[in-house]
Image (tube, rainbow, N blue to C red; front, top):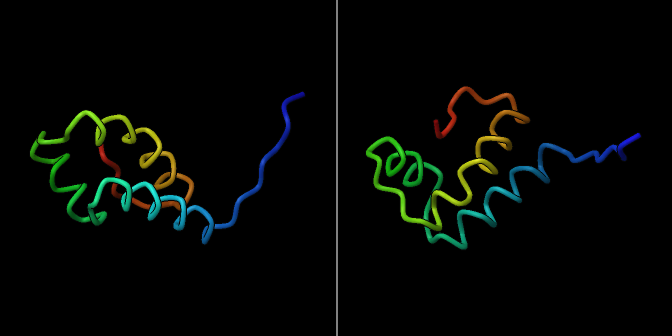
Length: 64
């Protein structure tokens, strides 16, 4: 049986902020760059993580 990991919504938001801070972007800037297909390699590398966080938070807006 796989271990279960529990995180709060606040922890997910903080994780997302850390990811975006490393990229030097806001969430809106990131989503706009993704919409325009202008993501750099580093920005593409975190796309799945950002989508997973949005899904877990019940948000409607995903990168893809």
